[in-house]
Image 1 (cartoon, rainbow, N blue to C red):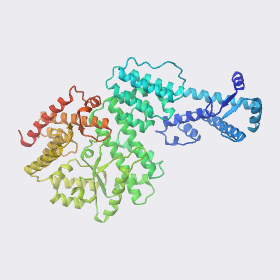
Image 2 (image 1 turned 30 degrees about the vertical axis):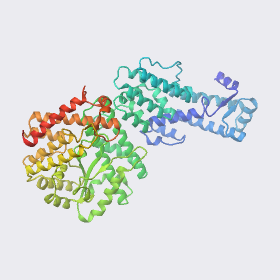
Image 3 (image 1 turned 135 degrees about the horizontal axis):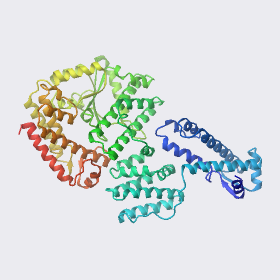
Image 4 (image 1 turned 90 degrees about the vertical axis):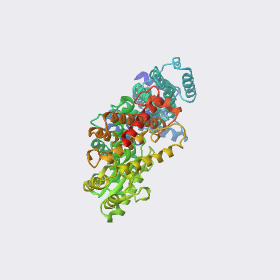
Length: 621
């Protein structure tokens, strides 16, 4: 301690703002902990030093450490004010000239020795804490790139050279260390060039040094980020927008016991209870969606969970968010102040939210829209229900700083886009008794009640059983479906070169239409085959002897294969996309679950298989 004090006295001056043990080190220390833990603890998102108290409550810091930091920060801020008051300009340097020390110590109401002891103590404590969090990296020399392909080596060396010129030495050393971790991951890995470019782009986007400190001291996080980037650039864009999620990479992944609808409901409700207004509710829900989508993606890319599990988890997540949004929409529309209570009582309103399409079949992919229809009971409630549903759709599509929840498609409602947004159950029943067309019956095969009144749900099942799927003319159903499919082929023929995985002859829509034709023409005598999931429907068609084992196997295998390409395209383009062009084939192959040597050949093989199923399903050939 005496040596430290002697060292302080021998210095000419000390910058209390940016010098070692100064104000900026305290701020960096606090900000880094906020970045690491702020995603989980909303209480840490404060912008002043009082956040230290919250860190103690969340057991991130000990009470002693928080008190030391707080005391040091207040002392240095007071000293800063005295220096600037004395000079009447913005200065941060404390001169160790005897005259100045005597003057400043007096203004601080301390004698000279007491003041110098305090300075030494504060600097020592702050430096020790700062260095404990960010261990110093002093290795010299440039990064070794000889093992990289020449083009990759040039890109990395150019980036590091430019970064070094624009940033302080300590920040550069951190970045160099990060790339040394990354280079270990690149060796022998497919798709490393794309991953390297995406990783450079990500590192360039991190404006706060705290993120670089975190990555430079956590090779595990760098390894996992690089591993995911090698399979999908989506993760880079996601982390650029949401860098705080990097911390979750070193946390244990969720267990299967955790990922249930009840668990997610409770987790979301706990967060929502702390929100103060609609804007905060939206931010909480969007962040919740992003966090769990990231967790699903992490399991998808790193653990290779089955494609059906990915779809199921994305659909469960959507169900939880729909329930919450509907409760909030009801509260706002009816001027209720207790949003949480409105969510809990959502089944009390006479309204059904019915998922359709991929959402109804629990087959949501990344970036999927959600297809829905809305039914209610009681003609007099039309205006009330309409207001709730309009607010519901608005909330789902309202953008926040972290994105929006879902785009909603309501075109599958009775009478299509020209029909009312919400329909009474009696109007719905009458319409389907007399007027529903084949395409509407097909659409309703994918219907699944997401939330709503139990009596209404039972009424809907009654309508399905007695009116929609009863006494259907097999030949008319076949002709209608084939005619609709023919129109889709005409529309597809005008698209640019490449494979439209969804609309192409022998693609996803053909598989779905074959299954739906068989469901519609057999569900009256075998109601058990009525299920919204395509794969489940194929399995039931096989189990009840409607199709042979080989056909069922071929349909399921091709469906999973094409949906896997769809998933890979969406992760590559980071949007809803069904068009596969030649120039992206090499990029999506590492993302796909099914490893194939020649994707074009595999696509054609599966198309030919589906064409045979097409003839077998419709014509019995």
